[in-house]
Amino acid sequence: MAGGKLYLMEALVGFDTGSELDLVAVVVVAAAVAGLRPEDAAPRTERAHVVRKTRERAPHQLIARCDVDVDPLLPPLPPQCFQLIARQLLGALEYITTRWWRHPENVVVARADAPGRVNLIGEHTDYNDGLVLPAVIPQRTTVELEAREDDRVLVQSEGFGSVAYVLRREERANDWGDFLRGVTWALADGGHVVRGFDARITSTVPPGAGLASSAALAVALLRALRVTFELPLSDEAVAQIAHRAEREFVGAQVGTMDQLAASLGRDGEALFIDTRSGTTARIALPRSFALIVIDSGIAHDHARGAYNARREECEQAARLIGVRALRDATERDAAALEPEHPTLARRARHVIAENTRVRSFVSALEAGEIVTCGRLLDESHRSLRDDFAVSIPEIDTLVALVRGQPGVHGARIVGGGFGGSVLAVATPQGAPQAARAAVDAYRAEVRREARVVLS
Image 1 (cartoon, rainbow, N blue to C red):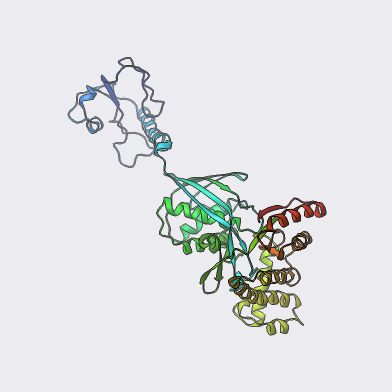
Image 2: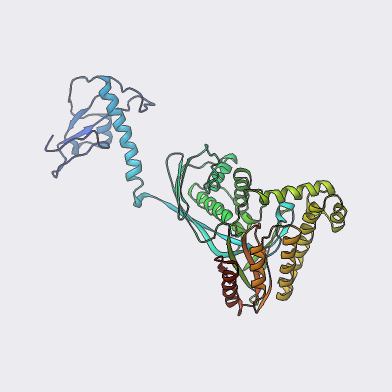
């Protein structure tokens, strides 16, 4: 055919020739019947044709075979041949969309990120309608996302492998991909329409360190989806959807603090959150105030075991006291619970005192009273260790090692507990050296590798 070779088994049509293709054009019209699917037999009346003088014809004329010289190429063919042609045509369309339209020059990639957080004070108060005071950290999770034309989701992540699933068929798999599936499930359940997508995830937020890596992931993904599919979501709505994904789909009975911090937090500020009313206030971090965060190297998992048990204990204590949540309980209520329910009384006592500590910490922060802030951290750790029972010996050792360094005014376990990280407040000049010294001492005493996240 004018020196060319026709490959119907390739995508659409391919010519192997160096000469100009102005003698013939091949037009395969196999979609004349509306709704043609790959499994449908092609119409008997459709067949391939040769159209002469192609350069004198407009593309729409070639497709419609209008006012052109058309010669039959072959006698009528059996239906099986036209079914093959139909399949080749539909395969060609898929080839075009996956190879040409998804060429790097034609793909729009949305890029979004979200930070991890450290909770300065207010631990295990958020799911008790209480007060919290998180601050963002420099470490962030980044999502690069490309929309697809189907409902498939394919995500690659450094260090965690790949995840693939189909939208609206999300099922828990008890792996890190549940945080992704939870986000798309929550979006669909809330009436927000998205298509499939390919995504690449990188993160410097250490997982399992009590620094809200899962919230950073969910918020970063939601931000990328918001841009890609033009979703009408405020930052507050992003936090709510991320929270619902982790609580209802993943199964971790967390409060709203992590997601609000990842979505609303800013560098150089603490975010005071009243989790009952949803109100927030931004508190500037003074320059005389340095934070130390050390990852103990012992990971925790909110979706399992003791964390969810603590929430159940708090809810049970609130019911026995007769209040909506432990936010409304008093020290007298906790004392009255002690004789018959000593464990529940201790859980209540921590939440009641921790809410008071949050307010005191905010006042000290605004006044620049670093020593007072440190004392409140020491009190919080003792309460988390003794009343709420979420610390472990290795964490207690790391807290003591950090607390004993020059220039450190207070330290405590941070995050949900049972591992994770340690937070300390210190003078800016001595913070880096104090952090390094504590890590070295921890390695020698506990024989574990800790890592300085912030100093």
